[in-house]
Image (cartoon, rainbow, N blue to C red; front, side, top):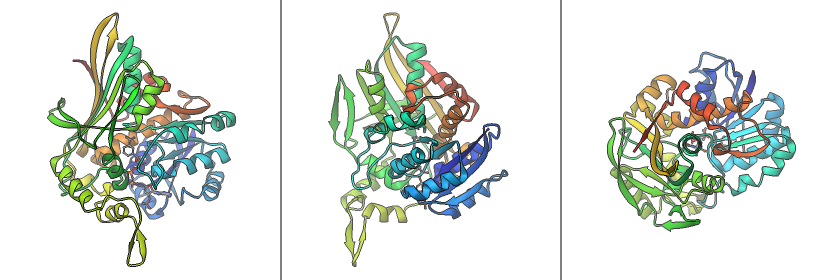
Length: 392
Ligand code: NDP
């Protein structure tokens, strides 16, 4: 049916390539391109369907546009880094191809992320008759769809939304991140922020915490309030939401190492002079930390990501929880990746499938909650991320 170009051969790119390859009716041809082509070849060798590979610097619009012109895909799936979002969108506009990503743009020189830069592409995508789907991972991504699904089926109005992300897995390393270390540490060390009655309220980084009892045998864990990008789009598209917060679990070990790394300056993102060479301490740190893609064989345990929603239905108050539990080892057995890459890569494939089959179609730039949640929810059950719902 369609040819896709996947950009980025990291942990998430590996899962997306496997999952697209598992669905040959939709993804008839797959090209995997990244900065280091060797990584693409390594992934292609795991799959018993031909996967074409290419070398590309996705920050270079003319070169990327030339690759797209040459390959003529119907869709570009961006699972490189948030820094490349705008250049990949530019190349898609230039070549007339639809676009999908899993993380919103952030400028390398500031640790801040926002949809504002990508929402500015709205008119250009609309005028070109193209679709850009933003944030088709798990959070953002499935969490937006969970919210839209809950709104449609279980609430007349949503008042409170708590998105809760737990990784109860253990990779056995003293310190490692489950997705790109630079992006992860930039996100975690930011100030917390949540939405309350029409305003954004700031907190210190990981200053607010509480206990949450997770299902699936995980049990009680401490969750920390953070700012996360789907809050921005959800309160825009569902203005009825009074309070929206995002929470994540961290092991004591992770927090201990992070504190030391921050204290000694290793998480700084401004370039410093080292023997006449400019280096960014956080980028140097990434070079010595374990590659998230290498954690798969060692990571045991589960992730549990979901949304707790409160609001009313037929004039009565309701509290509802919808979540997925994913097992690191099961993910590894299927696609040779741990569950954090798996829970991001599967929704990227499902989002691509929605677009390529015409199930989700529109002209312009879209966040996940703007589209019909039902077929996406059905596809999650079918493609490896079954979800559960309960009233609390
Ligand atoms: P990795 O660091 O493992 O992989 C990133 C890949 O992108 C690498 O192969 C890297 O190449 C490639 N890349 C980097 N810069 C360029 C460039 N200029 N041109 C071409 N390729 C480039 O990251 P992950 O796989 O863990 O994460 C991928 C994306 O998924 C990130 O944007 C992350 O924020 C997002 N994410 C989203 C989640 C969600 O739930 N929505 C959750 C987790 C991640 P090289 O190998 O040469 O370094």
